[in-house]
Image 1 (cartoon, rainbow, N blue to C red):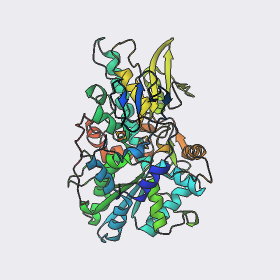
Image 2 (cartoon, helix red, strand yellow):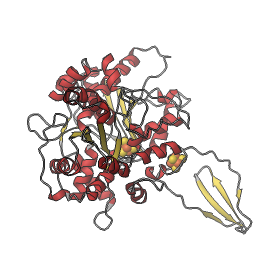
Image 3 (cartoon, rainbow, N blue to C red):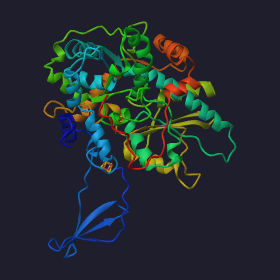
Length: 497
Ligand code: SF4
Ligand code: SF4
């Protein structure tokens, strides 16, 4: 732990997880009393029914033991499911490393940063700014003070991710509708943008679950391919920049994105990573403090890059409607229209066990034809997995799509977001404020085809992918593979970028 940036250490202490979580690593217990040391003269008993531990004194007195809870960022400190090599890997992507590389940078290097909208919302909440202001000021800080050459918007890449996952869902649903009764299930399609969930699934689940995960790359991974692929070829190579001198940094709401960026699948032709380093929102804020940047006082730079998601008519920042992580609502609307010719207005969600487990469905002629769920947090993820694997077909999971995210409340509540100052604001209130800011940009509910996408996305398919959504070329650029991994299998470490 000692080499983690102080941001990780601080977040470990103050992270806000509204719902307590069990360790995701399953532990098998037998129900025998466990004798404690001679000196204590107590025994500990586990009651499987109530999932509770009791301390029994010699006199037979029974006392319920308090449950402890852990947060996802605490998990990074344990070698239970994050291996020590992965811990080193996360360590390798620290703020200290970034500061060192920036200090030693040569004039041949080009530095590019991709910023997530959840990070912007978190910083906007901390500094009392709106989403346009915060982005313009961050742009000034990164370009004029810290020395980045380009700043891009991860929301822009979400358009590619959404178009591809919509197409993937449609193909699987159509396959299912035409499949014989005893065919192996290819649904629910499980969302893949959350690396916390992917890390868990690959290490603990078999093909029956891993095979259901969408192959579409996350926005961070799409930006990695774009920056060191298309953008490099089109903009940087003609200026004589060598690929080995391109640095791509992202700012994301969680530490898990550092592991995603290190995946062996996300490499350039010269064996470097498409994303070299991931900072959390808290680490970006620390970077500003390191450079004495007072964000509120800075001028705002215009948001005029082609890789920033803006509404073409109003010029305002744009986003995809729905939750802070996945795409369930957009895919639901698209499938209702394309498969059943139903225009969905307001989506009515039914809360299941808790507010982080919701479902919604579409009925046609009294019959449920589409059934979607959003499962946030590991307790809900485990419930979904149990349902998919249920031996009784009648009780088995009937969902067509599940938006699976590791953090309760989704990415706005990620472990790398800025923690609330308890003297100023209650953490729950702060999360509400971040969510409000996140949803304050112009939200698009209608993008069901590439024809309805912003011009820059259509041009991306034309010039970068050079083919249509779901084509073989888009499979190569915008999709990846997941597989069951041995617990100890970790990405290779590279000292050099
Ligand atoms: S890393 Fe895994 S085993 Fe360790 S505390 Fe976290 S969930 Fe549990
Ligand atoms: S849900 Fe949490 S772990 Fe998953 S991508 Fe979002 S912030 Fe990261």
